[in-house]
Length: 199
Image 1 (cartoon, rainbow, N blue to C red):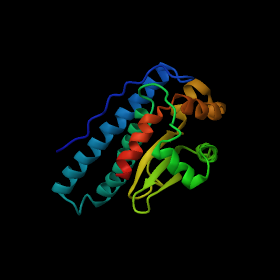
Image 2 (image 1 turned 90 degrees about the vertical axis):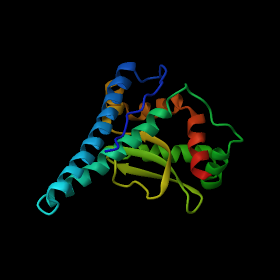
Image 3 (image 1 turned 120 degrees about the vertical axis):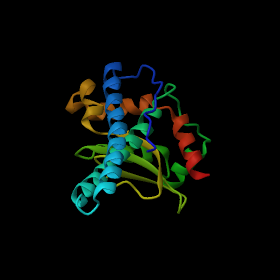
Image 4 (image 1 turned 135 degrees about the horizontal axis):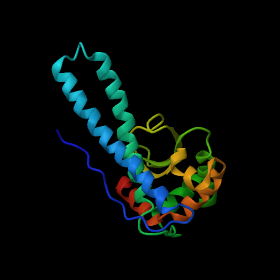
C-alpha cells in the first residue's frame, strides 16, 4: 500500500509562539499522517475480508479518513507558511492584486479574514483559490474537514484549534495569536501557493 510521509519543516524562532509549542503541534501533525495511513490500511483489510459484514466499520473508517487526511494537508499548509522567516506581500504581487480585486483593499481582506478566524469553535480560517471561477474565497472549516471547499486550493490556512495557541496564549489570547501568526507569516510561500494553484 502506498503511504503518506510526514514532511519536515524548517521553522525559525517565532514571535509569540514558543519552540515547545511548535514542537508539540508538529507531533499532532505527525499523528494525522500516521492515522491517515492506518485508516487506509484498515479500509483495505476490511474491504478484502468481508465488505458486507464490515460495512459499518468501513463507513466509520472512511469518515475518519477524511478527518485525518484533511488534518494532514491543513497542517502542511500551516507549517509551510511559517518556514523561512517572516516576509511581506509585495505591492505588485499577483496575489495582492487578486486580493484587492476581490475585497477592494488588502486591509479589508485582512480584517475580514481575522474575523473569520475568531469564529467560535475549533477549526480553520482559510483563503482559497477557486480554479473554476478564477477567484479567491475565504471560509471557516469546522474541525479538519467540515466546510472544505470542493476543487479549491488552499492558499493560506490558519489553525484555530486550541492546541495551536493555548500553550503560549491561554484561551483568552486568541486575538494575539492571530496577530502574531501574521507577523510570522512568510508571504513568499503564500504567493507560491497562489501561483501554483492559478496556473
